Image 1: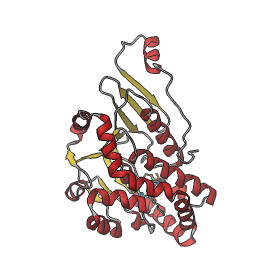
Image 2 (image 1 turned 135 degrees about the vertical axis):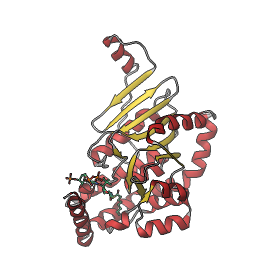
Image 3 (image 1 turned 90 degrees about the horizontal axis):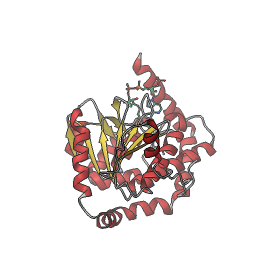
Image 4 (image 1 turned 90 degrees about the vertical axis):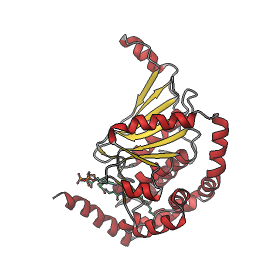
Length: 294
Ligand code: CO8
């Protein structure tokens, strides 16, 4: 489980990848990879850029296990001096992430809700507060928590397919996006766009998401990784310390607000999600998702 602000330190043994390649007889390409059940990470040591691919079919939902592995992977990269930037993308066709795993918020104990919510907070604190350059390469739909992951990055590039949508649609589920989801959203699109979008629980098709500023640019699917690499190179051309201090100056107040109210926020979540009416809304929403197929 993820504890507040203190994750188990899981540093890579030095030259882990190199040793593996040597024993397999492959050449010494400057690339290291590590993987867990949910996420694949490849670090190109020559550019200092890691690619993190979500690989948890069918929809990359952010379960407790997923969030824990996500945080551990981020921490590994954050502590790796060879890594300066990370591109976050998906290995599952047509889906970036379907957001928080609804089954973690339904029919469970209050202790479970608290543990789950702490992991959601931890994920956001790590992505939004990362020292690395973070780019979301959004190659599929990205509702709610999936949108939050993208919003927490420094830059968003989305595949131009209008079938892919993104947004904080919590209101559609009968739940309310917490203040730090809202703060992150407002900081990107401004108050008016965020207010309307949040009240309506809008999922914006890619072209509309671009128009509102929710994503920074659209590209054809086959150009996504190439474009992410080009944008990353642009951001990495600056000295890290100046960029990092500037990022911290822009984001610190929002991060500190959650840190200061973390336990209260967990309490609010567990109370809210445990309500019978909210459990009923979530059940109906899950049934609607299942019915949609048939
Ligand atoms: N959690 C759990 N299971 C999910 C989720 C999810 N978020 N999304 C989809 N699934 C399941 C489906 O039920 C389905 O299960 P099964 O195969 O057993 O029937 C399976 O994944 C595949 O789903 P689809 O058939 O719907 O796949 P599609 O490719 O047709 O569509 C979508 C993919 C677009 C992602 C679609 O599944 C969808 O819209 N999902 C719902 C997304 C959503 O609304 N997520 C919001 C989660 S809430 C959140 O992130 C923030 C909450 C903040 C809490 C604040 C409270 C105070």
